[in-house]
Every structure is written in C-alpha cells, then in structure tokens.
Length: 421
Ligand code: AMP
Ligand code: GLY
Image (cartoon, rainbow, N blue to C red; front, side, top):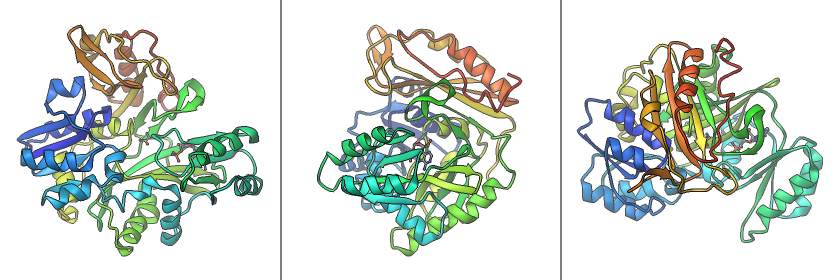
C-alpha cells in the first residue's frame, strides 16, 4: 500500500511512525511534513490548506490512501477532492467536518442524536451574549463558533473578560457567532472513534493538558501533553461513550446525508451529573494521538484503510500493548500568543536515545546550521513504559536532554495519575 499523510505536526509524525511499522505499507509520503518526519519518510512541499493541491499531489503520486491530519484542509473539502479522483481517503467530507468547523452545527447534531452536552446559546450580537451570560452564570464559557486552533475558548469567572472575548469574536463581522455555554465541572477525557460512517471502533481514552502552564494555569493551547491509559476512569467509560455518544452521532450524521468517515474525536467532561460532550473534532487529536498510537498494537494502515473503504465491520478487534504512554510538548518562547521561531534545537539524538522514547517533531525545520524551531509547539517527547510512572519518568529524562532558548513545557503531565513517579 502507498500512503500520503497530509500535515506537519507531531500528530502526523506519530501517524507516520505507526504506519511505517505496518508491514502492509510499501511507501509513505508526508506533505509538507517537518524536519523530524523528513528523517523517517519522503516528504513533499504542499500548501496543506489547499484541497485541490492535496488531490493533485495524491493523483500524481498514485497513492492508494490519503490520511489527512489537520482540520483546516478537511473543512476546506480536501477529502471530497481526493475521493473525486477515485482515491480512498481517511478523513470526513467538508460537510461532515462541520462537526468541528462550527460549534453551533455540532450542538444541533448532538441535539438530534440525543447526546448529552452543555446547554448553550448561539449569539450573533452582544445583547444576546449578555442574556446568555446571565442565564448560565459563572464560570462563563465563551467560544468562537468557527475554527480557532484550540484557542477560541475562554473560560473565566470575570464577566468583563467573557464579554471582551465575545466582542472580539463578533467584531470580525460577517456571519461571526459565539457560543455561550454552561460550565462543565469534572475531569476531561479525549476518546477517539475510527469510523467508516456506519461502524465505529473506539480507541483507548487519553487525557490532554490544554492550559499552557503547570496546575492548569494560563491560556488554552492546542495541548501541552497527554497520557494513556487513565487509571482513574470508570471501567465502563469506553463502552458507555461508544453506545451513548459515538454511535448515535455517526448514525445521525449518516441519516442527515453527511456520513462521517475518518476519526471522530469526542472531548468529554466527566461531571458530577454524568458524562457530557465538550466538543467534537473531525480528526486525530494532538497530542493525544502520540500516546494512543504508541499503545496501539494493531497495524494502523489496515485500520485506516478499512475505515476509508467502508469495511471496518470486517476487522478483528483492535489489539493494545500493555503498559502506558506519556507525551510532553516543548513549546517555543511566547507560545501560544506570539511564538518565536528560528532557535536552534540541541540534544535531539540524546533524547531519542532514552529507553522507550520517541522524539516526535512538530514545528521544526532543517537548516544548514542544524534543526531549528519553526512553530509554537516544537516537539512531543513521547515515552512508553510498563506503567504511567515509568513512561513519565522516561519522557522527562529525555526532555532534560533538549536545549531550546526560552522554550517552555509543563512539568506536571500525568503527575496526578502516576503519583509514584
Ligand atoms: P473546546 O475547544 O471546545 O475543546 O474547548 C477548549 C477547552 O476549554 C476544553 O478542553 C475545556 O478545558 C474548556 N471548556 C470548553 N467548554 C467548556 C465547558 N462548557 N465547561 C468547562 N470547560 C470548558
Ligand atoms: N488536543 C486537542 C486537540 O487536538 O484539539
């Protein structure tokens, strides 16, 4: 099988690493990739936001399968463009990707599917925002309706800050909208389901750390670290969420005429009143994918290909490695507000030499002087171990080998779940 992977983050580096380990894969090309991916597989230049450029590249390379990592090309119709060339694609159509592209759309589908989520109001003007803030009380949750790379959400007790964020979102004009929600308490879980539009197979759950700094302080980011499994989660969590959330969503999407093919990501809050959906994404999560795929023992290409070709029901049950995985993100100085780029990255080989560790690249670029930073999130240091404590220890040991001027990371990834570390 010849596969094109689209994207340039640590999520795509994790996908490429797992696909390479599948014996059914003959050739992998990643576009545009990054400096770390380019060490492992062929890469090509690509404007990954351009659906037609993706389809052209897939046709030119005569690949059997395209795997689209990020949400932006999916929302722009990349999967439709690839399928129109007769090539199998792992990723939803533009219409189905609206589950992530519009929070208001996602709420509507959840309502139809009978899926539990936060009560919400969609607002187009500030008067509506004020009313909604009164209705739900503090803490206030204000979300940009459209795509915002994980940074469009403000959760705050400060009404003025909530109003200011809503104003900033609405001031873009056009059909800009914000969603005001009730606050959901309780720990968060990311659960991914791989689907061909009819069958959905859950992966193992993971927990992400969205805030920039230790102790869940600072602004929301794309994600600063993750771990799996979740020793504290109820044993029935995956089965319950599959039955009450993933399957009804997939069935409703199909019945609406927009079947969802690819990865449905459920962001969940385990609240005192039960499990509620915080959001859906239309693609693998980053950095959760780094830990979930590290634990997956089944051949990934066969799973993704079965989803893309409507044959998931024929697959044997997924197999998982024993043990645990932890990933810690190293971010550039200034991330998430104004990340600096162009700083040299030292110690990559030493970090990769730590037992059980894979250094996955995100914002990196190769120059004549060596590898330098090229984005907000730079590396995802991913470690496997027999226990969460061992995986965590290995990840931080590897992280200590890396030198990047002004970079920052969280030191509490998986700490509460692995107290013996
Ligand atoms: P989202 O982009 O919708 O996933 O939101 C990003 C993050 O904001 C989530 O992972 C939560 O930590 C937080 N968040 C979003 N919605 C809520 C909510 N209704 N209640 C509490 N926290 C929320
Ligand atoms: N880790 C959060 C996301 O991928 O959206």
